Image (cartoon, rainbow, N blue to C red; front, side, top):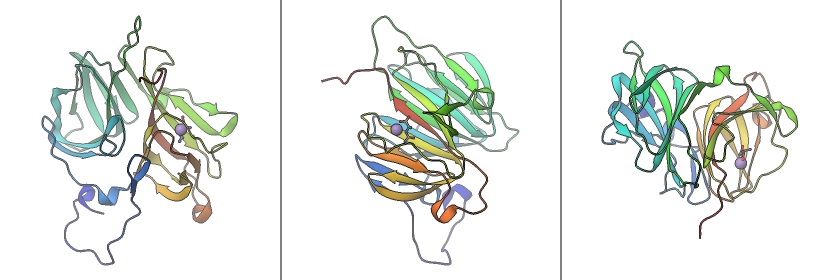
Length: 268
Ligand code: UGY
Ligand code: MN
C-alpha cells in the first residue's frame, strides 16, 4: 500500500490496481492508489480528495488523516457550502461556529451552509481519520437546516426496504429543510439490494467494513473496506455483500457511509 501507510520504494510484484474511473458515471477508488493532496488551511493533515466535480459529482468528499494537533481551524465550508464530518477512527474536536463537539469513532457533525466548520485532532498525538463532505446548499424558502450531531453507535438501524439482513441508518433528519442526507447501509454476509437502482441522485460512499460485489453500470466489481465508490446520477447500482469469491469465513457485515441528494426538484 502506498502513502496511507507510508511505504516507499518499489514493490515486489507488478503494479496493478482494482481502481476504476468512469468519469460522470462511476468510480471505485482503492486505498493503495491514494495520494496526499495539499489543501490550504488543512494543517498537519494528510488529505485525499475522493469524489469531486472533476469526477462528475456535485459534492466533494475527502479522506483526511489528522496528525498530532492537525486539523482545519481556519474554517471549512460556510458562505453557501454545507459540510459534514464523520470520524472513521480516533477522537477529534469539531466546531460549528464556536460551538464545540467532541467526536469519537462513529461520531459526526453536520454544519449548515451559513456557518463554517472547524476541526482538530484530540487523540493524544495519535492519528485520527475522518470522512469529510461538502456541497453547495440548495435553499428552500421557509426552511432552514440546523446543526446536527450524533454517533452512529447510538443510532437506531432499521430494516432496509423489507430486508432484515440489510440495515439503514439516517444520520440527518428526514426534513425537507435538508437537500441531502447521509446514510449507512449495512449488509449481512449474503444479503443484497432488492433490485438494481437507477436514480437521478448521486452518491459518494466510503466502505467502513466488510467486502462486497458492487454492480456499477452493470459491471460487477469487488469492493473492500477502505474503498471509495462514486455513483453518478442515473448510474445503475446494487450490492451483494460478501459472496462470490468472498463467501467463506467473513463474518463482518459489508457497510458503507454515503451521501444522497434529496428533497429538491431539478433546476433548469
Ligand atoms: O439510498 C440509496 O439510494 C442506496 N440504496 N443506494 C445504494 O446503496 N447504492
Ligand atoms: Mn442509490
